[in-house]
Image (tube, rainbow, N blue to C red; front, top):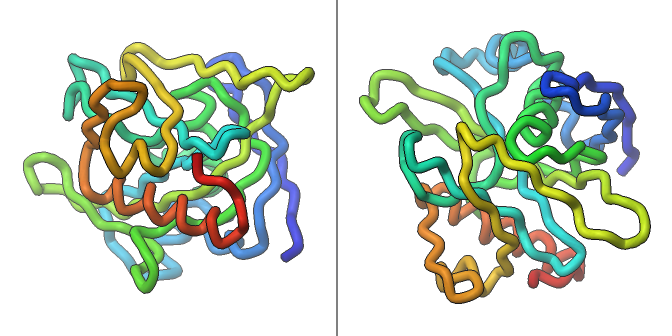
Length: 207
């Protein structure tokens, strides 16, 4: 499929401007969240995105929630709410990648659902069950340093306290390098397994 380029400002924390590309299959998410909700006649209280970022070994980036935050010490993928000021849902995803892990989105590759035959989005509530949110997940390729060096993950300590790169079997077992990795919810695990499945279909090693 063709790839369309669009400049997106992810400079909210002093980082560079991201000129990321996106696959044509993601055109639906190139509009602001308010437009998407209106187009699809949805009245969710908010829209969130998650980024599935893989390294050269086919491992996915996981981050551990801060001990003082909600769902303390649990693990998830980078992401968060799409803001009203974000130019598009994809732009909101790129901004969250920059803010949460210090990486710059290079290409939005594809949508990641909770599994084959599942809907495009996931629905979840806040802890009190009073607000309902719609969530999208995307596989995101990030800019890499020259010379074959690993990307440098820089966490926001207000949100996350640690990170790791996990292979498919690590996720299945819930253990990375001998350390127990408890995911924040079943939705995250379902999306992780689907992301690895899609990469296997592409013939890409899953770590």
